[in-house]
Amino acid sequence: MAYFYIVFLALLVACSGLVSSTFVWKHHNNEELPLVLEEIHEKCPNITRVYALTEPSVRNVPLYVIEFSDSPGFHQPYKPEVKYVGNIHGNEVLGRELLLGLADYLCERYLNHDRKIKTLIHTTRIHLLPAMNPDGWQLSTETGAKDYLIGRNNNHSVDLNRNFPDLDAITFELERQGINHNNHLLRDVTRLTAPVEPETRAVIRWMMAIPFVLSAALHGGDLVANYPYDESRSGAPVSEYSASPDDDTFRDLAMTYAESHADMADPQRQGCRVSNSDDSTSYNFGKQGGVTNGAAWYSLKGGMQDFSYLATNAFEVTLELGCKKYPPTEELEEEWHKNREALLAFIWKAHIGIKGIVGDDSGFIKNAIVSVVNITGPVPRPIRHDITTGDYGDYYRLLTPGHYEVTAIHPGYFPVSRVVTVPHHQTAARILNFKLEPKTSWFDDYTYGSFPYGLHDGQPRIYKRSLYEQVTNMMLEKKDTKH
Image (cartoon, rainbow, N blue to C red):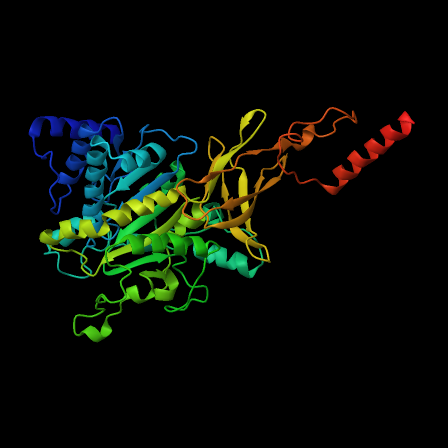
């Protein structure tokens, strides 16, 4: 079905002439949106692909994505995957138009041989979903685009950013029990509090199908970059800082967007009013750098941001792009100029930290666990959020500058640990590959002198004490025999 939609769009673009080759800043309706994407693909066919997610909206509107890559449609090791998702709330529309503008900009700058943009596209696979909730957009637009709530939900009157399985509750309960397990938690869901909507199902399948490393959801109603956790541990509705294990990295990601935005981090700018009555209810997040922990602002359950972090390898933040949820057409281009450098800077953050491949003599090892301990200070601090390797044994671990001990683990193999320094001002992730050795290959017989690979490849190794004793005993036995 998705293929039919794309072919149909291509024919429309070729025959109808409905879309200009010059991007126009306006509110594109649900019929125009895919035509704009297909027009961009026609201009940049070698670096783009337009596709639809596995399920349409409740009203059967496909959820279209445009991808930028030097090999569209294929994951490549060492190239991180990034996504932007707009229009989750149908009446919050700026993100929708910014992603269309970003797609056009990436294509145009690539054709104009912009060195930085070409490097970004050749080293990153970028996915842009302008509208997750086209039905809500339709309702909001048809009713005048003025109400603060009409159009927020999907056509089943469900808030899609409260519709994801609540994985925070699982990780908080595991914390209380002292169990170190807070990643890839979707398999631990035993029941759902509400049916999962088709738009939510489509996005979850998308998350599971592509090994995203970095993500942002684009919202409106305030001006701030929000990071996990969104849900408070105690159940407090507001003002409880709920730190994730990667709090330092999330703050860095959020600060990157805020500081690259024209005025998100400005402490002197005007805040967004909470009510329409007076300015006394406004608060300027610029006074705290333009960022906030989610639960420190207000707690929510079932959000996409925390789900992404706890169900996949992706680090996701939520970007509130302005006080106006549905800004007038004449303000869209100005908002683009305010956000453009921030949108690009955030994508570049997929290249911080470390990346590599975990394998053995036979090839790649899928689903190996990569765990990290921060050894920068006097006391080692485990980051209790592991990631896993993909189909090609590749992993991507976002980290802030510092010194780390990184361990690769897989059942049936000996774990291997290595120490790495993540520098300041990274332009590319440090490459840290691992070769693991099956436990069955170690000393199946007691023939001394035939070492398994790895003892001479410079990799530090973790030995079990029993194996260490076996090696020592064999060396002593050989020595006694010789003399």
